[in-house]
Length: 358
Image (cartoon, rainbow, N blue to C red; front, top):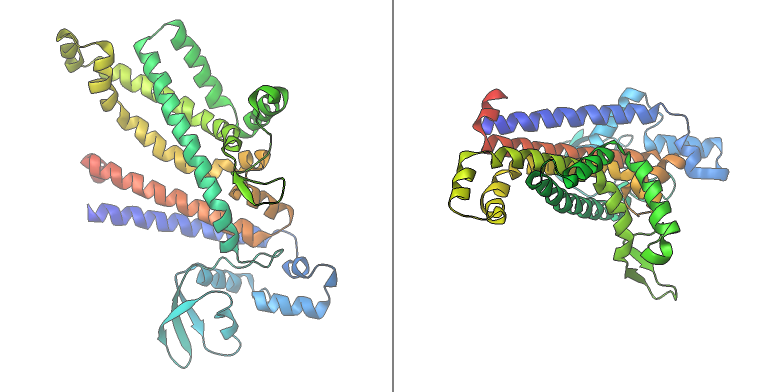
């Protein structure tokens, strides 16, 4: 079991290394001069050279990549020379020395995602403000998809081939084929514009809204309804179909027929026996979809102006604020990899055949 867990962690580390490499080289070949972006109209050649030297942009792309890996690594290596000591700056990150000599020092620190070109703030501070909203949106979307999807799938299995089953199948097909960004536009127009007098919903807004009289922020839960509904449509369709298929398989088992012969009602059989045993593939799907929702929320958040990582990424792309975009992408990838590793390990715990096969 330990060998299986170590392999999964090793695969995850290789995936992260590949993502870091791709993200770094992709954003470092795009047009744009970071120094001139930071200086704006005040840019002159001498100031540009100073900024480039401070950011390490005066070095070759390969050396820049090594510095970037060193910034991201919790354990980083630095030279004690005056030329190199600027990369070990307490204004960038706090650290604790593990080993030091006359020429080298090894430190333990938090991963450093660098600073925004536009606001000069640390990327970690920007993302720490945005990610909670994204995670809340993903959780609410997943909860909505799970509850409604399991309910619809269960009813479709019970009333197989009925008019309800056919309607639910149409909903599943539509939900799985409807892109999130297109659905967001349609739902925003329909429920927050055409039907706004009846729904009371607005096209734009985040979890907290500013008081009209300037007395602070208020929790505004209605603003999460449309983004969560839009984001939950596709997983809802998948969960509904999985629930139906799994229930139909369980309901054909011998022990279900035995329960029927004992006089248990359909609801009792479903609640006590069938639904519990049909949940394994559904829960597997939920774990995978939750990771996908974190990445897929980008377009939905931007359309509804939900103050999450999606808005941060789009704003960063518009302003060529590459450190912010790179940091957001890396954190999303880290979360995806961690969730997938946890799911794989749970597979191995629940089914030993998975450990043997992998």
